[in-house]
Image (cartoon, rainbow over all chains, first blue to last red; front, side):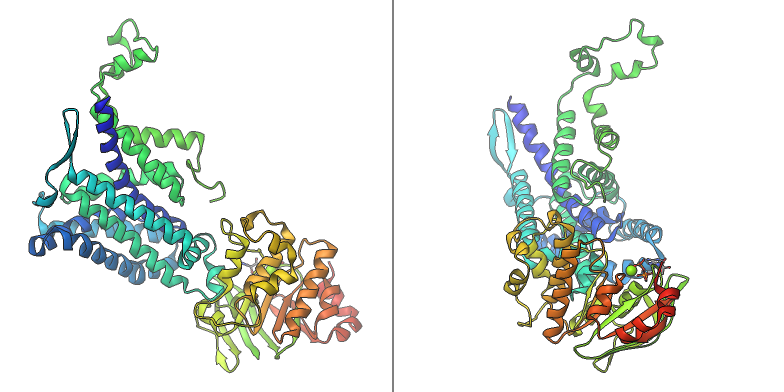
Length: 318
Length: 231
Ligand SMILES: Nc1ncnc2c1ncn2[C@@H]1O[C@H](COP(=O)(O)OP(=O)(O)OP(=O)(O)O)[C@@H](O)[C@H]1O
Ligand SMILES: [Mg+2]
């Protein structure tokens, strides 16, 4: 029971982190029709910028400055890169963002090296806030949850309560019509791209100390983020939230419970074949849950694509 | 007020408008007629800065060609596209509010005016605009553009697929728009309503203007109607 609660908290942390990336990615996708391969690279930049800044002036200023810098980089990428490539079509845009992801990785390696950098949680948050039975819950985890939740609420209020939010919602589906009503849609695009990048940057700032700050961190998270927005339904913010939490909990639970697949399948009433060594499926019975954990999100994606091709919250027409 | 000179427009490599000339004076209702695919919508899109073009489009002595769509709108050109692009997920009221331009102060039209003209919109003010009927959506898109207080408004096939009663209400709104001093470029398929309310008529064929005159002129020219309008 206690382990379940602890795992719930860990899963929530993972899920909210995923959401900080998937929310921006899914908004950018529905607005511009571009799947931004470089999105997770902004997450990585967030972590490295925060690492660098925190060495000079500490973690707390870095928490604010690094995402702003990442947002500016993102806005510049949209303004001077994507917007120019746009007229050559979606394939060109995809290739552009793909190239950008590689470029950012190379630059990061060049500046900060190939290994992990010493980017740690601030001293002030390195203590156990409370414990559940024998498990201590680090204050930093609760801090991550608070930051992510605050961002989610702010995003929701902006999108549903402000005029800019209305313009964004309308421009998601009808950019030309919105612009013909006198709204500066190119500026809105740049803003959404910048804010989306900044959100990924925040995720990098707070996840870097936990998940590690290294040049491969974008690739590690990037593919899961794609899975998340496909599962949630491209363009749906609620879908992104639900899918992020689902995948966060799925992977965390799988990683924490060392249950053999034989037991699991047995519990489901599936008996192993009499002669295991002869069976093609032999390997399945010898695996354990933590081993299959990492592929569960992909499995989920396949299932969703089979039964609801437009994603859990996706729009059929989109 | 609006002068289009030697306008050519392109979708990628396909050359759709071949030297269109057109004038709309202040307060005038001008109908733009023609068969499907002759380039009427493209003419509107060109004025709005939504397609690649060559030539000149002057509005109140300023050149529109080369400007961004939102600048053109802010200068006072309104556009109601043919596909009734209502913003689903937003309410009727939110749709109308999006018609108001950034920094706009007042204007000829208030939300209350719209609700007076179309009580249906008031009744459905706070529901998702996606559930409105086709006719209501058409009214909503026209009202939305009017909220931005344009001085000239281009309306693309507003009566398409509407019942005779709804068509009459569109005609009433067009007259009201004109009464408030707004020029209208009306793209139409239905000859009757166009001849009824327009001051002048243009007929297009193959990306060019093939006839220009008053409704009476067009009534007198059976040959033009036969060659360019009747199906
Ligand atoms: N987005 C587009 N890409 C390529 N060609 C287009 C596009 N839109 C229109 N065309 C072509 O341009 C020509 C003119 O189209 P336009 O929409 O202006 O016609 P229209 O007179 O408004 O007729 P209708 O609305 O009845 O189709 C047509 O031949 C059409 O096939
Ligand atoms: Mg048309």
